[in-house]
Length: 162
Image 1 (cartoon, rainbow, N blue to C red):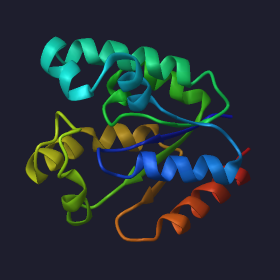
Image 2 (cartoon, one colour):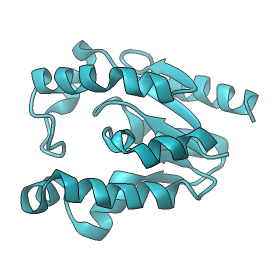
Image 3 (spheres, rainbow, N blue to C red):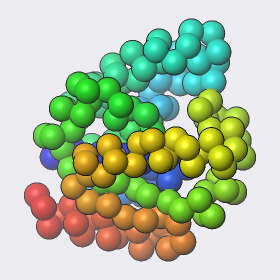
């Protein structure tokens, strides 16, 4: 079964996803990286074509990734698409959460067009929290624990739910 990581920006989906894929012996797919490889930087896509265009590219990347027996990291907003929500029912969905105090140092780059500071991050998290929780089969906080411990907890959950 495909394992999907969801959660807000800067929750650690890519870093944890790479390690989890290695731990489970599966390939890793980051849908944001797939979009960048094919279409260029996400902030540039937003600036030149707008969010609806980006969401169409994202939907296609997600659809493709979910056909693989892999660990898949979705961009924070990918779950807003109703088709993606329906597709996630056939996967194991892991929600990575993070507290604002821990994320402050993580959002200092320009790779996140919808998150420019801690206030915008918190507003985005608040607007999506209920949806994230409704889609998740398992949830884990990434704020302070070592990555290896988080990965091991997720791997044990996945292995116990095959």
